Amino acid sequence: MNAEQDLLCCARPRTEQRAPMPMKNRAAQFAPFAALTGYDDAVRETERLTDRRPEISEDRAELLDRRLRWLREQISTEPEITVTWFVPDLRKEGGACRTRTCRAKRLDEQRKTLLLEGCECIPILDICDLQISQEDV
Image (cartoon, one colour):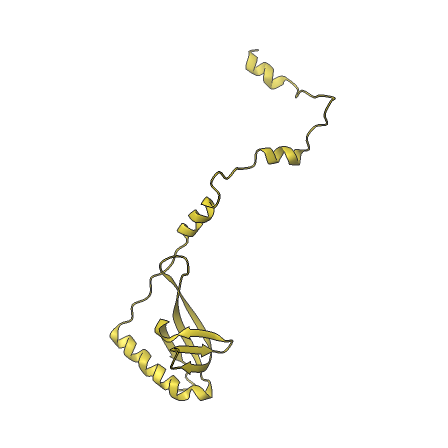
C-alpha cells in the first residue's frame, strides 16, 4: 500500500479533551459563502423579463376612444367591462399587461383615470383594450 491508501484506511483521530462537533455544526462550516452581498439579487433582477408597452394602431385607438365615450355615458349603470392595461415596471424598463373583468365605477376626467370595483384605479392612457359585455351594449 502507498501513503494515500494508508490515509484512506485510517480512523478519524479522536481526542478526549473535547467532545466531537455535532453534524449540524460541521455542515455549517461548508455552507456556501456569498462574498458579494446582494449580487444574487442583482442577477435575479436582471434575469426577470418585462414586456414593452404595446403600440396601438390608429384603428384600434379610434375603437378604444368610441368605447370610452360609450362608457362615459353609461358609467352610472356601472357596466361590466374587460379592460387590459399596461403596468410599468418600477425597477426596470418595460412592464406587463394586466386584464381584469369587473364593473366600472367611475371615469375621472380631471385625473384621467378609470376606477374599477375593488378600488383599482387605471390611468386611461395605459389602457390597451376595452371590451364591453354584450348585455350592456
